[in-house]
Image (cartoon, rainbow, N blue to C red):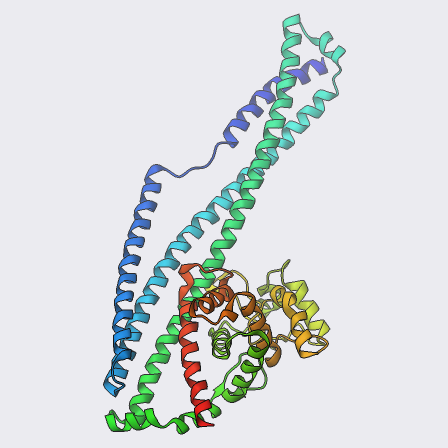
Length: 452
C-alpha cells in the first residue's frame, strides 16, 4: 500500500511539476506601453543630441574663422569665449549620452536580477523533480505491475514516469539557457558600466577645459590690462615665452618628484627616438592621463579609508593579483601605492579603478608591456610610478595603436584606443582634446627650439 501511495503522489506532484515548468520558463516582459514610452524617450534624446551636435559644428566653423584672423587681443578673447560656448554644448551632449546609457544600465540590471530569480526558481523545481525521480527509481517494474489496479493503470503509471523524466530534462535545458542568458546580460551590464565610467571621465575633462579657458582669459587680461599694445608685446616675446616654458611645472600625479617642462620634453624626445611617437603627442597623453581630476591617484594612499583600498577598487580576478605581484617585485607596499579610484555616479561606484602612475596603466595592461620597457631601460623591473618608465611604456602602447605614423588621424585613433580600447564616437572628446593639447605643446616645443 505504501508503494501505491507513492505512485499516487507521483501523479499529483508530476502534474504540479509540469505546470511549474511552463510557468517558470515564461519570459518576464515589459508591456507595450512601457516599450512605447522607452522608444519615445530614446527618440527625444536622439533629437536633442543631434541639435546640440549641429550647434557644436557651427561653433567649430566660427572658431576656425577666428583663428585665421589677425592675432589681436579682441580676436583672442572672442576665440576663448567661443571655445567655452562649444565646450558647454559638448558637456550637454555628454550629459544626454550619459542619461541614455544610464537608462539602459537600469534596464539591464533589472533583467539580470529577473534572470537570476528565474534560475533560482528553476533550481528549486529541479530539486523537487530529482527527488521524485529518485523515489520512482526505488520502485521496480514488478512492483509497478503488482500495485496497478488494471492494465490501463499500469501503462498510465509507466507513461507518467516517462513524462517525469522528460520534464526533468526540459527543466535542465531551460536552466542552462537561462544561465547563458544571465552570462550574456552580465557582460552587457559590464560594457554599459564601462561606458558610463568613460562618459563621466569625458565630462570631467570637458569641465576642466572650460575652467582652463576661463583662467587663460583672466590671465591674458591681467597681463595686458585689456590693451592691444601690451598683448602684441606678450605675443612677440619668444624668449620670455621660452623661459616660462622651461620653468613651468609639469605635474605628474603619483610621482614624488615634479619635473619641469624642459625635462618632460627631453623624456618625450627620448621615447620618440625609440618608438617614433611624436613628443608633443606623447606629452599630451601623459598630461591628459595625469590630470583626470580628483579620481586619479586618490585611492590606496597612506591613511585612505578601507573602501579606497586596492582590494576594493581594482577588478579582483583581472588586476588584484597582478598589482600584488608588481609591488612585491619592486619592493613596494601594495597598501600605500596610489592608484586611480573608480568613477562614481550618485554615490554609486561605476566600473573599476586601479590605474597606476603617470601613464595610468591598469596592472593587466602594465604586465603586457613591462618587458618591452625593461628591454629599453635596462632596469631589472619596470616601475609604473617611475616617470621615465611611464613615458616609454606610454609611447610603446601608443606605437602599437598606430601613433608612429604621426598623422592627425592616426594620433587621434591612437589616443582613443589608449582611453577606451576603441574609437567609439561617444568618447571622441578625449581624442579631440588630446589633439588640442598636442597642438599647444608643439608650439611650446617650437618656441623652445627657436630660443636656443
